[in-house]
Length: 89
Image 1 (cartoon, rainbow, N blue to C red):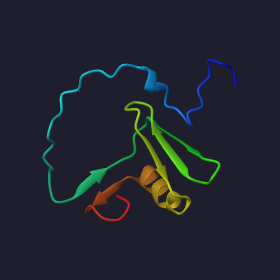
Image 2 (cartoon, rainbow, N blue to C red):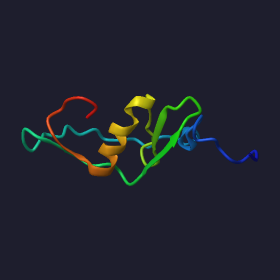
Image 3 (tube, one colour):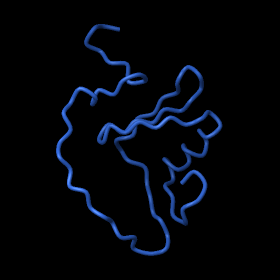
């Protein structure tokens, strides 16, 4: 790996960028059901210990899931979710 490349399993490339000011907004739910779909900015990889690493290149958010959670997370990313807030969602 050259000196200019970044290992995204260890460091987010966005860590070196100054964050822009963000206005926070409270979003009111449209109904009793939650509707969600995976972002097109999500990048995924598997760590050496089997953990499932999900990185959103738009927001810079990084989530690490246990190996046994991988199938559920992959299903949510592929199919989205509509329903109540429970379990992984």
